[in-house]
Structure formats: C-alpha cells, structure tokens
Length: 250
Image (cartoon, rainbow, N blue to C red):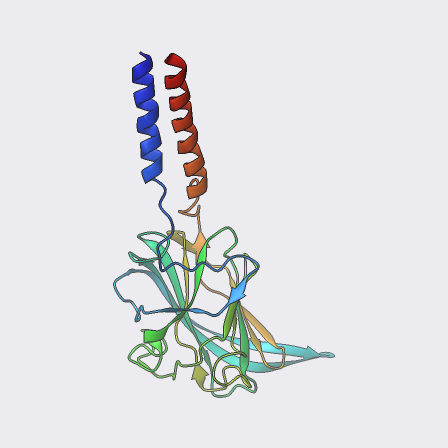
C-alpha cells in the first residue's frame, strides 16, 4: 500500500514538472510601472489570424481657454481585434491593432496615445513593421492611403493604461505625428481570448485631448494559472515527501 502511495506521489511530481512552461522566447511583456522601446512585430494586416472585429472611427482633440473650447487635431483610427495562433501568450489569444492618422486639417501634432483597459492582463506592446509604407500602410481597410511610418519612440504601462509616446520617435524627436501622417499598426498582444471596448485617448502637442472607445481585453486572463515557480515548489515538495516516507519505511 505504501509503495503504491509513493508511486502516485512521484507520478504527480513528474506531471507538475512538465507543466512548468515558461513564456515563449519571443515574449517581452511590458510590466506595470515600466517603460521601454516598443517591440517590433511582423504581422502584416490580417496575417494568419482570425479577425474577431474591425472598426474605423474619427475623433477630435480639444482644449479650453476660459469659456472657449477650440478644436486642435482631427484624427482617424482604424483597427481590428484578431485571434492569433502565434500570440506570444497563447494560441488564440487576442492581438489588438490600431492605426492612428492625424488628418490634414489638424492644427497640431499628435504626441501621445493612451490606451486603457489592460489592468490584470499581460501585454506585449509595439508596432507592426509590415504595415508601414506598404500594402497595409494604414491598416487593411484604407488601401494604403497614409504614410504609416510615424513609429512610437517609447511605450509604457501603468497596468491599466498603455502609452505610446510619439514625441520621442526616432530619428526626429522634435515633433509627434504631424498633420496628414499616420502610425503603422500599433500592436498590443494580450493573454486573453476575449475583447471589449475600453477608452482610447489622443494627446496633441498643445495638450488638447480627445477620447473615444476602441477594443481591449475582457474575461479571465489565460495566464491565470499557477506560476512556474509555484509549480516547481509544489513538485519539489511532493518529491521530498515521497523520499521522506521511503526513508522512514527503511
């Protein structure tokens, strides 16, 4: 009977040990409270994923001086939520892709893009290099009408809000997205297979802001399982217990 119990314990420890699966080698999560250079993805529009939804919308940034509210920038956003079999967190987790276009009639540059709704999720943040100056320049819906080469210089996360800093874009750090120019597809990969519509705020060089609703993750994170370190400790404990019992019997 004791031998059977020892066998079961050692079998469970073996199972737990093979469950210790780290993040893929190409995953570079943006941790809450951190910042850094954006990751570079090679997705190319719809690539091989399954499109869950797409949208195209327009917004405006405004600022108020006294009792007067003035329009500053007029922007257009094209985006999609895609179930990606090659998502860095899981097969079928969602990639969110947005392209921001500063329209020709704007009076200021777009210097910052704040994307809310990521609290509690792992995120990998950057831009799609294949969507700049090519067939997918401003996303798959606009047929390449925009330049699509204004990449973010830095990205940061508060946990809930991801910020794309357009003012520090290389090689020109003197402006944000000037009128009649656009970003490539800005990408946030998450550890969720569902999406909802959190807020998205554009900030212009005169500190005007405009907020609209876009896509973001929802539901429990796929990564809401025991961390690899916890599994290692648990399997180690089971092995130690099995060894101790075997030693006691002897």
